[in-house]
Structures are given as structure tokens and as C-alpha cells.
Image (cartoon, rainbow, N blue to C red; front, side, top):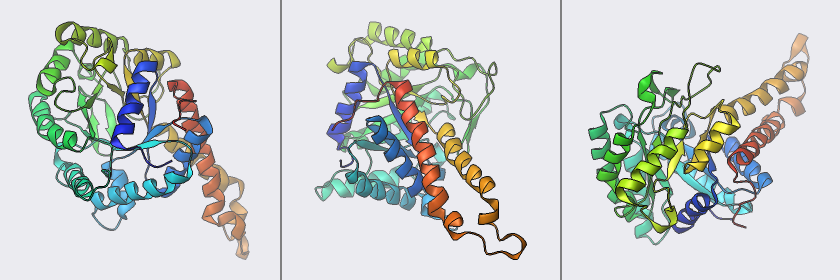
Length: 346
């Protein structure tokens, strides 16, 4: 199927909210990892979200140049073409964009989509994230207020982060401390600034102890029940928002979920999480397979003792197919955890 239109993306999100499941949003950095995501979603019978960070876009553009906006556009055009052959629907999203990267990443991509829409075509992306977690909340929301009308005009969705996700991802890093927990007051300020959809649709990454990357049990205390408490508080103060929202007015995003238990994920999804970012686990699945291929076939990959090696083994397609299949299995597993398996649009 083609990449989701903005209208179809809205329907996807509404379906997830109504049926209490979430879509995996998988970060990619190459055509091979894109193929792995499409394979995994297809095997699970799930729609999903494919996303790229600033660092991923840099890598798409080529490590020897500085062209992250061009890399992101190349990512979007590649997925748009190859996704046509798969029986599932995907949306395209840009992940974490801090303040100092707006001018070189999100803003040029919005401009590119504006040109596409003027020409009668769909925007290149269905949603963009503004990561204001490193600036004061007031500034975070003021910048979001400036971006939201532009995404709304394109029928795109804006993602904001209200609170702090610990750990590090693509140069955006935060300590692990009490700031990892969004308060109801923070969420109230967000709604007062951005509304509940009347000024444009947005998703909120509220934090409840989340940490990017891998952490050992006991180092982080997740409190996903906070999300339900905040939803209830917002509903009491502002009402339910859009009719599709029911008693959960906010569309929520789960960041930093590696190592989370099935129970923690289920609690978050039941509280209105409709998108969960998947990155560390799929990176590991892909690279673990590559390592296995190299170690298991070292005498074919390397020209040991003057031998010629085995071209069938060191051909990147050989170990690349295995890596894609390993990553695809992890993608499919995430759809089971999040409940999106079997909810494809076919």
C-alpha cells in the first residue's frame, strides 16, 4: 500500500485510541533497516510508523557531508516508493529535534512538504517532533505554538515532549532524576497553550521515568500510572476534547521503552499511548545478526592465510538479508506487545 495520507494517518491514530492499542514507531538509518521494518510489520499484519532522527538523516545523506534535511527527504521518498509493494500502511515521522536543529531539520522539511502540497501532492511526512525537553517549559510551549499552525495547515501531526526522557539519543541527553516525571500542572500548561485539537492535532510524549537506551533493572522507576492520572485531570479541567478521544483527551507517546515489562507497556497503552518508539532493541537485533554472521563465517569473510574467502558469505546481501529478518522479528514482537498486530488497513 502507499504511505498513509494525512487523513489515513489520523484514522490510524483514532483506531488505536478507540481500540486501546499503540503503533510501534521504529527508527531507521538505512534502506536495509527500512526494509526490515516493512517486512516485520507485514509479517505481523500491522500498520506502523517509520521515523528518522537528525543523526539518522545525517547518515542517510552520507557521512562525509552535512545534509540532514536532504537525507530525511531521501528517506521519505525511498519509503514512499518501496512501501507500495507491501500490504500494510505506514506513516512517516521525524523523531527528536532539539532547538538548535530546527532550522536545519524540521523547518526545511515542513517547507518541502508545503511545496508538495502546493503542487497537489501529499506532504512528505505525516508528523514531526519538536523536542523542547532541554529548554524551560514556557519556551518549549511557545515554540510549539509557532510550529503547530504550520503542521496543521499541512494536515500533519506535531509531537511534543513535555517532561524529560533520561539517557541519550542522537546527542540529546538528560540525567536520570526527578525531572523524568511530567506533572499534571505541566500537562495543563500544554493544553492551555496548544488546545485539544482545535488549533491542530498533536501528540504528547509525557514522561513517567522513561530513559533512552538500555538500563539495568532497578536503575529506573517507571510510573506509567501517571499517564492515566494526567488524562483524568485534563478531562476534568478541559473536557474530553475531540469526540474520538473519549475519556482520554490526550494522544500520548511512549519514549525510552527498552527493558519495559509487558505490564508497564499495557498500563501505558491503556492510559492513551497510541505510539511507542522502538530503536535500541531493533538496532541490537540487526547488529547481533551481523555479528553472528561474521563470527560464524570468519574464514569466508576474511581472506585467512592467503585464501580467497567466500564471496557468497561476504556479499553484503548475504548477511544483510539475515540482519533484516532478525530485525523484522523484533518489529513483529513489538506489535504483539502493543496490540497492533492484526490491525493492518488491508
